[in-house]
Image 1 (cartoon, rainbow, N blue to C red):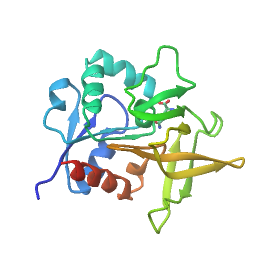
Image 2 (tube, rainbow, N blue to C red):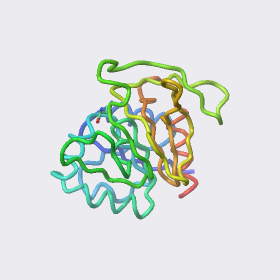
Image 3 (cartoon, helix red, strand yellow):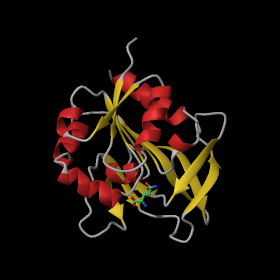
Length: 199
Ligand code: GLN
C-alpha cells in the first residue's frame, strides 16, 4: 500500500510537529502554502497556532477560497486547536472580521478555558479507546454546541458541564488539544484511517 500524501497547512503554527507525527503514522507529509499544493493531497492537517493570524494569511496567500472549496468537495481534514476553530461553522468570541473555512456543524468558543488558565494538561477518555489520552491544551477552544451529525469523541468537564474537545463529522476531525506534542499517535492514526477509508 502506498503512503497517503497528507498536506499540512504551513502558514503559521506548529507545522513541523504535525508533519513529524504524520510521517510517523506512515504517510508522506507535504507543506501547503499555495493553491497548487492542494492538488495531489488526500487529506490536510490544519495545525494549532493563532486562528486570527491563519485566517488573514489564508486570504493573503489566496488559499482561503480554494481550501474551502476542497473541503466542501470532501477533502478529509484534521484541525487541532486553531485548526478546530478554522473548521467550525460558527464561532463564539470571534475577533472582529474573523472568518472560518467551516464544514463542521459546531459552535466553537475560542480561549474557552479562560485567559488566566493559558495552558494545562489533562488525561481525557475516548469512549472508543481503552487507554486515556494525555491532552495538552494551549489557550484552547471547546465545542459549545454541536449539530446532530457531529460525533463527540471526547469531552472535558467544567462546573458540571461536559464540553466536547474531540469531534468528528464525516471526513472532518477536530481536537481542542495538541496530540502532536505528546508522541501519542492515536489521533493522527485515526485521521490517516479516515483518509484511507475515503481513498
Ligand atoms: N487561542 C488560539 C486561537 O484563537 C488557539 C490556540 C492554539 O491553537 N494553541 O487561535
